[in-house]
Length: 140
Image 1 (tube, helix red, strand yellow):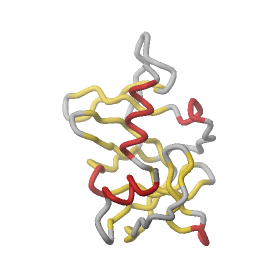
Image 2 (cartoon, helix red, strand yellow):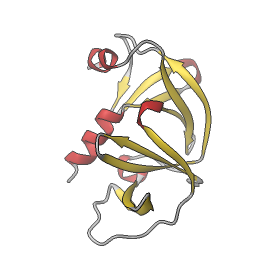
Image 3 (spheres, one colour):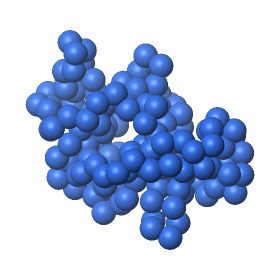
Image 4 (cartoon, one colour):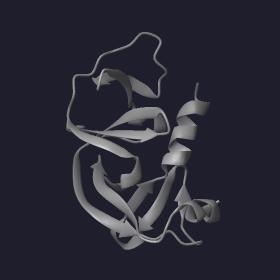
C-alpha cells in the first residue's frame, strides 16, 4: 500500500503542518482550499455520524468532520481547514496551523489508516486525502 501512495506523490510534496488535539499532523497543500477562523456550525438532520454539522463557504454547504467518529480526540478546534478532492469538500477542525514543510514519501513509509508517517522523530503524521475521502464515502 505504501508504494501506491508514494507513487502518487512527487518528490518534495509540500504539506501544511497543523495540530489536532495532541497529534502533530500535516495536509498536502494541493488539497487545501482555505484556512478559516472557526465558522458558524449548523446542525443538519440525518447527517451521518462522521460529520458534526455543516458550515457555509462560498454559498455551498460543507460538512465538518467529527474526529471522534474516527477515534481521534480533538481539542478546541479553533481553526477550520477547507479541504477538497475533486468536487468533494469537507471542513477539518484543528487547533492551530504551522509552517509548510516538504516531505518525500518513499516505498517504506509507515501507514496507519488514512495517516502516513512523515517525520517519525517529531511524530508528524500526514493525512492521506485519497484514503480519507474514501473512508468518508464508505461510511454512507
